[in-house]
Length: 325
Image 1 (cartoon, one colour):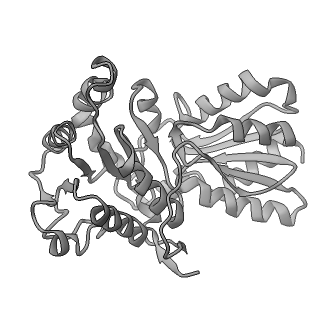
Image 2 (cartoon, rainbow, N blue to C red):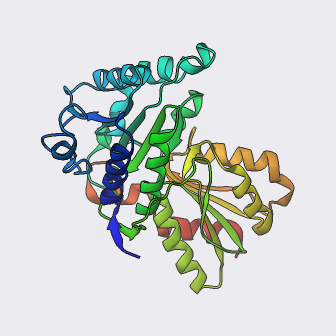
C-alpha cells in the first residue's frame, strides 16, 4: 500500500468530498491563494474556484459565524481555524449557538459544519499557539470532537465528518503533518465513535489521544522488549467516545494508563478514567495512571518544551513506577 503524509491525506479527503458533493465549501485564513499555511488546501482553489474555496478576513468570529450561516443555509462548510488557541475567540458561536441549534429547534435546524484546527505543541510556537484543550467541549453537548493520529485515520475520519449532519470539531496535531502512513487509494471512511486498537496486548492498556498515540506505540515497543505486552488504544473521537472498547481492554489487562497532551486538571484523561471506574472498577489491579502535560503554560524554549511534553520515556517510567511490571 502507498504511503502519504498526514497533510496529503487531509487534502485528499477534502478534494474527494468536494468532488462528491457540490455543497462542500472550504473557508478560512489563507486557504485559497496561499494554499493554506500548512498546505492542506494546496491546489483546491485552482480546481474548484473562489466560490468554493474562500479566503476570509483574519477573524475567527467571522470564520465560524460564516460557516454556521452557510451550514444553516444548506451548504457543508469546512472552516479552518489556524491555531486551536484561537477557538476561544469564536467560543460564543460554538458553545452558545452552534452546539445547541439542532436541540433548540427540535431537530428542524441542522448545522452540518466541520471546524478544522490544529495545536502546535512540539513546534516551538510558545504558550499562545500550542494549547490543547478538547475537554472544554465535553461541556458543549451537540459538538462532536475528532482527534486523528495517523494519515489513514485523518482521511477516513475527515470524510465521515464532512458527511455528518452535526457540527464537528476536527483537531489535528501540527507535529504530525509531515508524518507518513499507509493510506489506500480506494474510497473508504471511518465511522465516528469507533476506537482503534493500534496494538494488542495482555499486561496493560494504554489509551492515548492524537500525537500521544505515536509516543504510546513507541513506548509499547520498548516495553515489549522488556517483557511487558501493552495494548494501545486510540479512541480517535472524544465525542462520541467508544468507552466499550476501552473497558473491554481493561477487563482483560487489569491496568490502565492514559496519555494526552492537555494538563491533568479537567483533562480528557480524567473523563476516560472516571468512565472506566464506573464500568470496570472491580477489574482494576492497580490505580489508573494519567500521563499528561504539567499544570503550566507551554514554554517557548525548545529544550523546556521537550521536557514539558508527554513522551515515550514518561510513559515507560509511569508504567515502571505504578504497575510493578
